[in-house]
Length: 234
Image 1 (tube, rainbow, N blue to C red):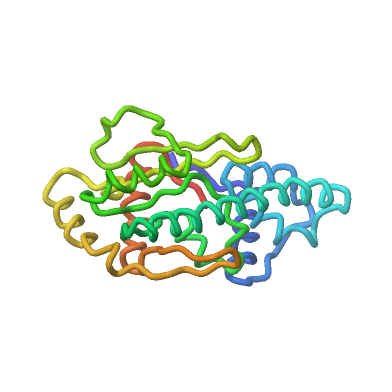
Image 2: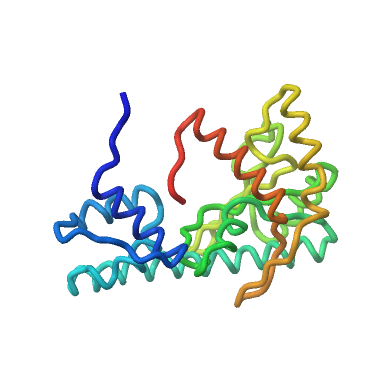
């Protein structure tokens, strides 16, 4: 059975079109803003939705949401500093890398700081994984699980009560199947680090994949989520 898209979901997509592509939304007069913003929170796109919805919202509701969104943007600023710190750390250790998914995706947004961020996923060559882990431990990170994952290791730094940093060190992107198609994908992504580019922000810079490699990583990641948990707008 096909599930029909709700009015709140339709409005949210209109708001995304305005924030990302500067398309003017057609907002109905009976818009259920509580439902729209609830959907935006579930989809992890509240800052983007609020930026586009602000002119249509009742003043008091806009004021309350602005406070919440400001906190999310501050968290994104912390995350951006994390990326710059990662770059400086790995550059000092002479370890080539690229950051995957989150901040690499945000680089395409008109206002990157409005994309809600999670942990930092970055890719190194497998032979550099031990040194990269040691560099993170020097910065105060600790491993959060046993070393039993074949493609990545998770690290956490929570000594600062105002900010929790979670970094995931990969030597292979998530979601590549262990079959012939997977082997072709590994060959296609083998030079992801060498073809990466420097992304500059107000706080500094870090390396992200080029468009082709990043697009392929996102397709693989999306396919994995579709099979196991579904995908969201973020």
